[in-house]
Image 1 (tube, one colour):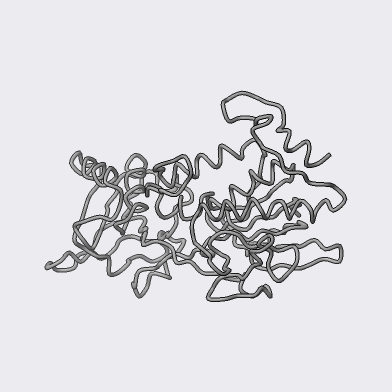
Image 2 (cartoon, one colour):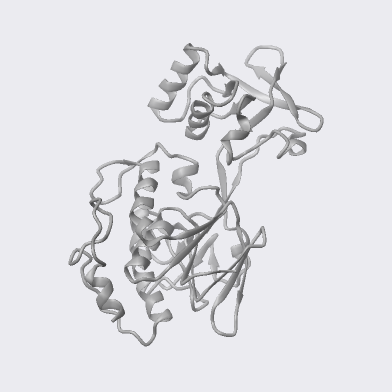
Length: 351
């Protein structure tokens, strides 16, 4: 059983920033995310997409935002359950909650913060009739362990950042990387497109466009795929792995069955106070929630996380008086590479 002060469901930007705000109050956090790494959409779907609404950053890449948030919260030592989806929740007699994942991992906390963005993500699967027969047998929709592709023949399908980035990365691991896209133009970052072209020119990536994968071949494991190039006859292309990267489809998932008040696939919260749901002790922050005037911006998620943590502190420590002060009074360890004493805001809050 994993125990913590605040259990955060969703390790996207809002969930990660919650760790920082909770850490200032000396509250420990544990995060659950169905994806294999922190960052949510910023890491999985568009790591090289520029974001423009982060204060003090005229422009920052989504992947760099995740990296900075992880650096910011490192001092508070959060723990993670990654690659698992939060499935069920049970309220205990002492007021705490037990959240169990689809793999049976149990977590206990007095406060649950749902920061699941647009929900849990499921891969968008191509319309290939027999593809489900080869899932985990050479067909992978999310790359979790790049080493399994070492010295293998890999075919990647897709035209976005994820397809481009993984084709580039695996070109140094796999014996052969082939990138198939139904258009000649790619949707990814320009530097990634240029890098793929460079790797194509030196023979490290095979680029087949415009084309589509129509079939998967094999018995116990993938042995090849059928490629149909525009205006050409279909042909079989040898492969050990087929990785279709067409993005992830957001779904609220099992959280929709937790007894929360739902409106248009979002969780209703009390924005006049602390972003608490209709169940005391369960909060929803970021894109997953809804209230009058809601804006789905990362900036707004950060604001909601800040107010939620103050409410969570009062819920966990009702006997302690919370007095907000500026974090700049005493500094925070790690921002400039030095070790500083705890911020006076923290000391005051828990005294």
